Amino acid sequence: MPITPQQASVEARKICEAAPIVPVLVVDDVAHAKPLAEALVAGGLPALEVTLRTPAALDVIAAMSKVEGGMVGAGTLLTPDDVKAAKDAGATFGVSPGATDTLLEACEAEGLPLLPGSASASEAMALLERGYSMLKFFPAEAAGGAKFLGSLASPLPQISFCPTGGVNPQNATDYLSLPNVVCAGGSWVAPSALVKSGKWAEIEALAREASQLPH
Ligand SMILES: O=C(O)C(=O)C[C@H](O)[C@H](O)COP(=O)(O)O
Image (spheres, rainbow, N blue to C red):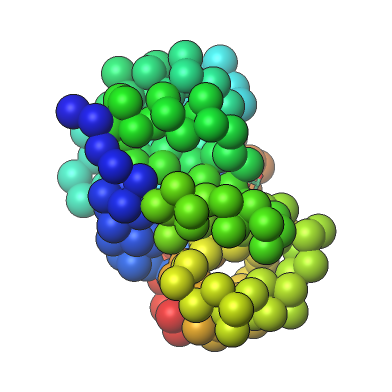
């Protein structure tokens, strides 16, 4: 079922409102998918972004989608083929580093709510013109950080953001305290060394700390 940009942003906002942090996951081994998702959900982070950056990513999405209480999305969406594959694998939302008309059309046609990336006022305005009001601010730290993002709140109060890229436990509160930030994305809650060594309790503890950040 196709969706409008407005509906996509309503859905994306609900996903972002579920917790202060959306873990950004790069998973190489499908065997890690279920225990990793269970640890993050148990720690209080239900919305999970699985980047399509590994050959296992689609199988990881399929496996994580079965974990109760989770909301699994696909990150690094670049092409219509990515959108279709992510949807078929069970992703319930998508995230992209930027936005093109081709990608937006594909997500709307497939009915996959997208959190499209924006790094400037003009990009955010173009997305708003099309109907998107819940955006990813990427790459957050490199593009100007919390100071830049906060500066968009006065002229563009209709737009909310999920900053991602360089967000960490030290700067997360700077972003989360902004009026135009709903949640932030970050990879620190699932460091690859802990994932590879199956340290699920440690990952759950990192998730729990992140879930308690004020937002
Ligand atoms: O692949 C994508 O589409 C992405 O979403 C990129 C991520 O936003 C960053 O990789 C997260 O970066 P860190 O939290 O700084 O490690």
